[in-house]
Image (cartoon, rainbow, N blue to C red; front, top):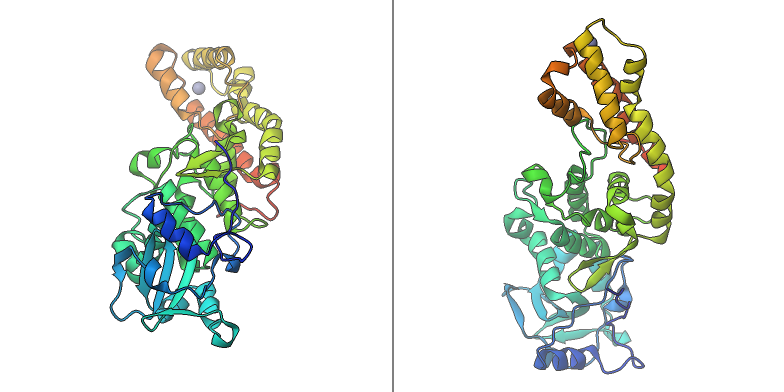
Length: 378
Ligand SMILES: [Zn+2]
């Protein structure tokens, strides 16, 4: 896997043939060229240009569903063209508004076709189609419906375009969906292994694969490099839970590769020591109860002793899953050793103590991952 080159699809006299001709050649050869990875997400005005070539030979294929009969702007993306309305683009996107305001025939920057302004972009047509669908009708009325989960790769593509064009309400919605998969406040029922995967069995509105914690952290930085959305903390924690430091590897999304920024790779690598120490601290309440029993019930005392031994043997004080719940381990113990089950009072006490330590560990994530100003949501 390689990082794709950050080529610009804009028109430049010293940069090969005009985009119109390149587009035509690619189309004729049936080699749709996906635009280069654009992880900076800064509005890249130089990726749009207005050559003087006639638009007539490059407007097809049209996106029929977004070729609106009374549209007055033709967007020509890679592999697709759209006829839409300037007022709608301006309403949703500051960037489109600025591009349309640049119309200045005297500067030779305007291309028209059939009385429509033509804007060219290097965006991948099907992805731009999704963003335009959302602008017009909420993405066939599903994008804003949380009951309908969306694959992370799809949400990522829409979000990157929305950031590029500053479609802020789409970015905000994407962030709120991601906050379900990558929580921004401590939830004692969460962080059981990689529980964001597959939408948490249908509970979350984003369907993630294991490696999407890397994609999510990279996306958070793409949204705002300096002050990323809060879900980045959980995403980075999950990155540290991947086997053999997989966060060093890029994640492929189509032909694009998403990387964790090098600063985040460094903090993840250095977080291991803290996570190891925190994981030990989180499980300590069981050890304290072993040293100082809270009740005189012999069965309960025997059960605590048994659990301490088991946790030591299987390395439950030597991991780096500081946020992981222990509840399932109590269930496991009770099921396997009903004759050594902890009394209800002691079990509730130790589980609550462990959850208290987990909450403290969660609160420390901002500091651990170097996220300035990060605070858990209340
Ligand atoms: Zn007890």
